[in-house]
Image 1 (cartoon, rainbow, N blue to C red):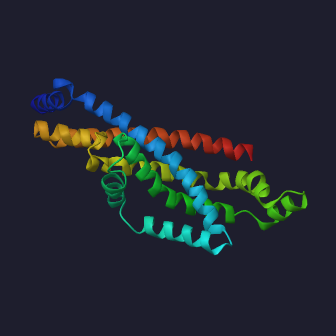
Image 2: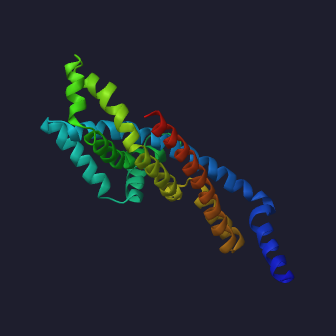
Image 3: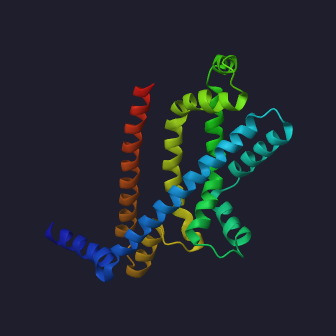
Amino acid sequence: MTLLLSSVGEKFYKCFIYEDRYKLLLSGIGVTIKVSLLAVVIGILLGFLIALCNLSKKKPLNMIGRLYTNVIRGTPSVTQLMIIYFVIFASINWAKWIIAAIAFGINSGAYVSEIIRAGILSINKGQTEAGRSLGLNSKQTMLYIIIPQAVKNIFPAMGNEFITLIKETAIVGYVGLMDIQKAGDFIKSATYEAFMPLVGTAVIYFILIRLLTVALSKYEAKLRKSG
């Protein structure tokens, strides 16, 4: 037992303490959080616009929304990331994490649009008629009556999308970003130890997701009470 603990301690020191390798993981956490937060903002804004396109009675807007949703949902996120980074933004000198966040935001927007669309459709049509009877136009009715009610319905699904997005960012290493997963891979290559770096990255992701889940659950409970 003593030998086992000693061996584990040596591997832990070699992987995380020696040459301050833990700093790679700390830096990776920062990259993951930055990419995820910006991607969420882009995904929500884009998803809302696409949802309105999909709900529109105008055929051109509806076709644009459907095309976007089908293409993004029908292709791998890693392929989208590489196309956006190596093709679309190849000649633009922007920070890697911003380009990666744009790629994930575009990807997330397709899923968020369906969540928002379903949330809007879940509101009784009588709410729209009530808004119009009060003298509100269609835009005002959507903004002040429908969307506030839809937010409560879509919040759990939006939270799940955010959680999924954090885990999906583990592929940013394909464009040279040192996120949590890439930091773990670097440590693995430098030490020839697979167990510790992989378990370490898994634990970090688990803690991040768990903290986010608890925070989202508390906020969801407040939304339910306010309703």
